[in-house]
Structures are given as structure tokens and as C-alpha cells.
Image: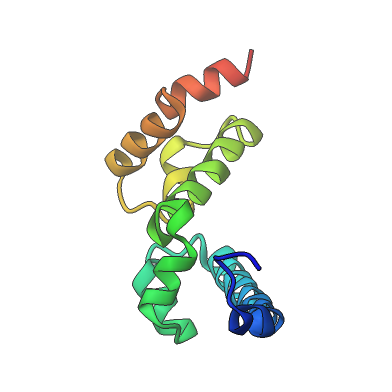
Length: 133
């Protein structure tokens, strides 16, 4: 017998694996709930990790663990807003950059421009100009 596996481990391994699958399924369901909520409220400038916690009544530690790979829920929300902003800059070439930023829930032009520059390596206006060529 392998010195790492005791008879107890072998006997209960299927139950432990089944429990892990259940946890994974419930975690996936929670992530889907959060994604749906964030998508539905993305343009709300009050959307934040705190508002998601409050609305969905999820444990703080669970929520942060579920979005750890994204850099946290706040980073997920910001990155999703930035992806939408990049798409909108191209889709609506005559819209003001500020209209797009405020429409996606950014609270100020400087916060939006800094975040966009960090994510895309250029200002929103430059991104739009390059995409329009």
C-alpha cells in the first residue's frame, strides 16, 4: 500500500471528492449570481463590492475568495467597465469620452482616464483614434 494513503483515506476518498464537486457547483452558482448582478448594475455608479455583498447577502470572505483570481470583485467590476468603454469608444465615435465613462459608472474623468491608460497603455482618445484607422 502507498505510504501516503491510509485505508481511511481510501475508504472516504469518493465521499470527499463528491463533497468537493458540490462545493465547486455551489461556488459556480454564486459566481453566476454575482456576474448577473454586476452585468445588470454595471452602469450604476454606486455598484461596488459592498453593494454586491449587501444585495446578494453573501459572506464577505466567500465573495473575495471567489474573485481572488480576478484581483478581487472591485477589479472585476472596473475591468468589465473598461472593456465596455473600449467597445463603446469604437462603436460610438461621436460620443464624448466623458459620456461613455459616466454612462458606465465611472465617477470622474480622471479616474476613468487613469484606469483606461493602465489597462490599454494609452488614453481613451488615442485608443479611439487608432481603432478608427
